[in-house]
Length: 356
Image 1 (tube, rainbow, N blue to C red):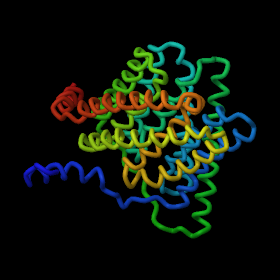
Image 2: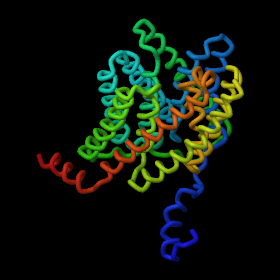
Image 3: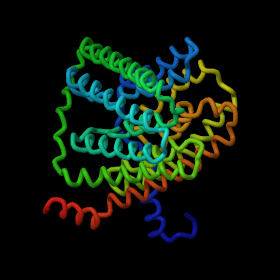
Image 4: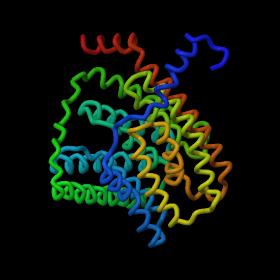
């Protein structure tokens, strides 16, 4: 900060300080273990039977446990069952339409619109629509084969079912341990239908458009652009979106270095399975504390999910390409966030919709 006057230093520190803040929100050790097991057990089974690529799909299905809420057991399991169905629908649309770039981008935009509107209307807490979008994008990275569509969706649902079983065991363990802390009531739904439709449409356009742009640019794996766009646009305010953008850019750069280190050692499937468990545990421990730190570990985990076969062959080229993809997706997400949180545009459109 040398060379800046006190006012300039204060302004600069005011923008940097929130990026470094450490939140006091933390998750229980039991939940962290349950989340790590849900993502990790399928890949250990896949490694044992020599079906690691298929097990990755089940591992992604296991991420549904992140939607487990601190409510009574019956409502908790109902939410997970509904989210599992949502995962299956999002995944199926991707596997069935990936043969055509325009159709694939269109169904991705439709998926983003529906899951975002549904999550916003029911005031679903974080991670909100993000993992539905991740599942939808990941399904589009698989080679199109109509004969395998049902099998792949079934594998995803096996991962979801395993996560639901682990969630049930965790919930029963809480009861046996007499964890009688008050449960959260069901959140009240957001009744601003016009605002929800507008925001969901903008997010869908930017995520779907980012994916289509990545296809038109013939990027190696267009999965990364829409995922980065969706991650940035999850911010509740424009300042939060700016913070997420900075966190994602710097976290990704460091995380790609970690991914390069991992794959430069040529890990086998057993090591990768162990890394999925460890990274999942660390990510869920950090994501509520500081998003930037979590992104450092999210990056190598997503490389394992989407590019583990390629990463072992040409690590340097893959890491560089993914950095470009994520920077592009983050820029699109930042632009989309500016549109969403530009009050004059949205207030005018919302008034037109309400007054019709």
